[in-house]
Length: 312
Image 1 (cartoon, rainbow, N blue to C red):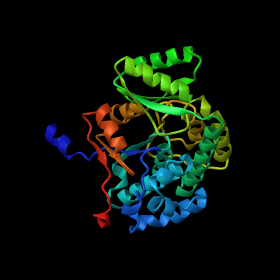
Image 2 (image 1 turned 120 degrees about the horizontal axis):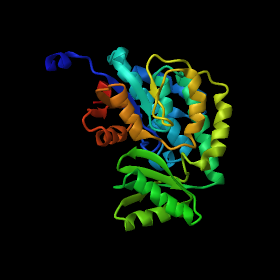
Image 3 (image 1 turned 60 degrees about the vertical axis):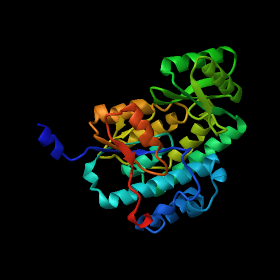
Image 4 (image 1 turned 90 degrees about the vertical axis):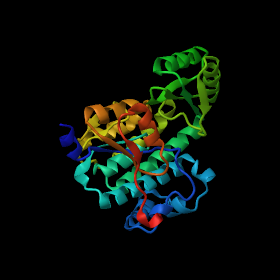
């Protein structure tokens, strides 16, 4: 039985990162590959100069919500397209993306064309940036406590009159909270008193909370002009940690995603336990998704997609 298992093809899951992994020059590994041809299409659809963002724009400027989102989407898509040139598609079992990364997953799965993905990411980034301008927020990662502990901290902060919610359930021991800047600072102080570690993130928006309701309304308008296709392989949603293959499900899920917590740990459990994925591959800049996967499902190999040979 062990010998037969060794000869089985791997059941791969593709993971795509969200905002926060961007850095200057992150597109350089793919600049001289055939996949770079898609960059012009992404620029036209999104309204951003994607080549400049991927190659020249400084890390500080890339922290801007709208620029971070389209640049990470583009770099992750380039990583996926190069992978597809060498690895048979039938080995892929399922897809998932963290927040923004869900749009890359939808393109990789065939639910969206690259142009429609870029169009939506451009609209989403602008809508979120505008919502944050009108109602600034903050986010912080709380580490060392489980979900009930962190949600109890959030409840204590809300009782003081501040806005605060759990926004990303990244792993059993890493939960991101979001809300008003005062609420986030209060949560960090409470967490440290409880012996937990907490770190304020370099963002000015309370993503995946009710602060994003105006952005979800703007995104709904953009979604109305996009056609989502059915897929042969599931994309696991941030909203419910369930796999979806019907294109008609995604406009509602994309709208809900902006104001709902990201159930990332549960998403990884679905990939491994639900779909039997035996290898998790992180596509895009950085290795954040692979690192989280190793914490959540330590028995399943997880690592970054290989860089193009030309970049070595």
